[in-house]
Image 1 (cartoon, rainbow, N blue to C red):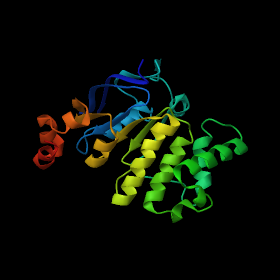
Image 2: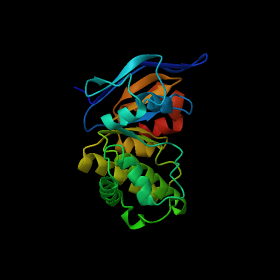
Image 3: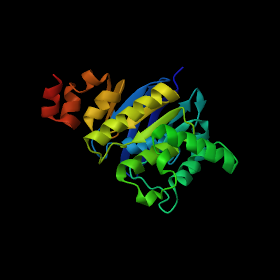
Length: 244
């Protein structure tokens, strides 16, 4: 059985069909990249999976359990965590406080939340900055805090929305290593939206390509990047030539 199974998911806004009959399966321990042009429907799919918006039709199952009528907080407790493309921590609160917010999704007491937050901060490398206000963090550390807060909910599946955007080469490599450790040491499966193709190619076991809300390609990274439909819709001839 797949960890996550999406069946025929469809969502329209007015006359615009943002997601059109989208289906996807993610196995336990798998990393799947979700790519496509801006406006292709990638973040809308994240919002549908996590219950932030309701689908017009279709269903989302986690471990065989339908999440269709679940509220976002119930979906989080069921085991799906996410980050957001625009990071918005509680700026005037400490790094530890921000991590504890995520921990409270599963624990009830401040003592339990603090213990879980400290453990997660140690994993992501932010423990030395636990008493720093979030507004004082650099962009890379704010993105790392975003991942930390999501991880503190103890997800089985983590949705990462452009966590590498705006990072330099060194920062990007550190973020890649963190994602690889998530799978290896915390047994977390991942669905990743990312425009940096080198990142997607490095991390993904499989890549799914969206265009105008429709899936136009799915497969191993090396086959996707050489697919003519993907080249025309998203990658461009230069990148396609580099893959061949």
